[in-house]
Length: 323
Image (cartoon, rainbow, N blue to C red; front, side, top):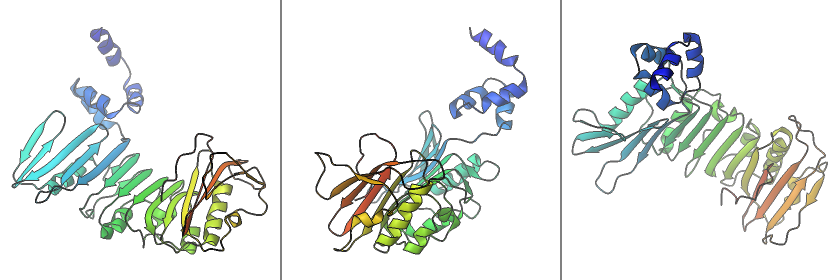
């Protein structure tokens, strides 16, 4: 049976093989490179963009160094450094090095996976990584996640990213001074920022993405929230979601978030919680993608702030992302 498969593969024209390789995952490409010298040359000559690249770091216990995790699709490298010895391990191998630090190993690994000088993938994740990105690193991706990096490095990571993102997810204890960057303003589909986002109404208005999930630190007002919600209603696609947390005053009426032209229907359910209001928007607006209604709008009242959520799907209501 294997002989038949091998014969079939060798008889396929090179142009067809190159086409098929576009649909092969990382493991398949690695296995094919082991088959023959010609197959290795074929794989190496065919451009490949991985689904995910991740660079992460986990703090060590008291007195111990952190552990670095490097992921390229299904391949995960664990890099530790103890007593001047750096250990690099995967599921199938372990290497020891007494010359390079764990950060040197991370830099060399990135150099190996670069695609035409860029760190390129569909999704790139920078997770708790404490190292400042080197000057020659360039990130190219559709979806970028940055989580709990040193605050002084956040702008650097964004500056290293080509500003053509579809989604940007930044999770920090506090976020400020990045809202004028093209990488943030020009994210086209979804912008998620948490927590204590020091963004003003004017900065919120410059955000291109109609779908947002933002926790304001107090600068966004009800008027700014209303404008952002209108942008979502008029520009969102089926499946897009919206979530915004902002402070309120005692005289705030959540119904002011709705445009007077919209056809609003309050949904009364038996299990609704106190301080929770559910609505549908059944028309009265023009959406550039042909959306005719927003079936789920949920408003949560808390003591000093409010959360407004909206989404198109009719699945069971998930809890709010941010509290």
